[in-house]
Amino acid sequence: MSELILEVNDIHTFIGQFHILEGVSVTVQQGGITVLLGRNGAGKTTTLRSILGLANVRSGHVQFQGREIRGMRPYKVAQLGIGYVPEHRAIFRDLTVEENLRIAERKPGDLAKRREFIYSLFPDLERLGHLGGNQLSGGQQQMLSVARALVPENQLLLIDEPSEGLAPVIIEQMMEAIRQLSVHTTVLLVEQNFRMASQLADQFVIIEEGKSVLAGRMSELVGNTELINRYLGAA
Image (tube, rainbow, N blue to C red):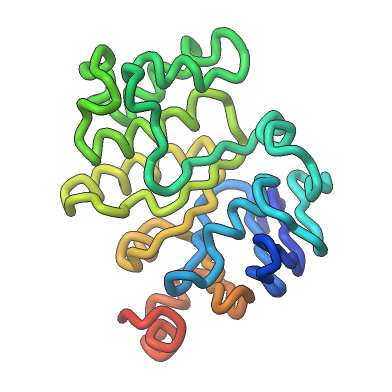
């Protein structure tokens, strides 16, 4: 079995006075793709934000490469080698594609080292480098959002809802890009599109009402219509 790169153990996370995560555990093996599944509002995005130090985790453990990171400031977590692609893209719309990539550098020279790899995944971005973020289509903005997280050399990439709002042909392009980048970087993915998730992920964790309720190999879940209907409402 592969070595664990991330271990989240029984975390309880609050937003204000609201107890959002009430015991979530997630293990991510080095290499490949693990997906967090669950209905809207189950706590998937909050789990990613908890890992990154962007949410108030009051108890439990978050370990990255064997090191406890719960309680660390988000920028310290990022410096350890964890990248984040938030939902809703969150690019800088007034900056060009090139400028969006350049400001994602963790240290000088990052983009120069990774440019060829990034453009091999997203060739559209190379020809659109001079355009502003507000001139890109939704799919191109999503490509740029993922590309920014690839500028530093991260060991783990957290990607939140990459297919949201995209046309089917763009979803296929995004799936292929995630497959290719997962050869180099371990991926923890949140994805509502079960077809996309089932074709990408090696492992899954289902979150329901702020608790992790089931985990295993994606190949075992795909053939189990009863579980899919019970927890996801989509066969």
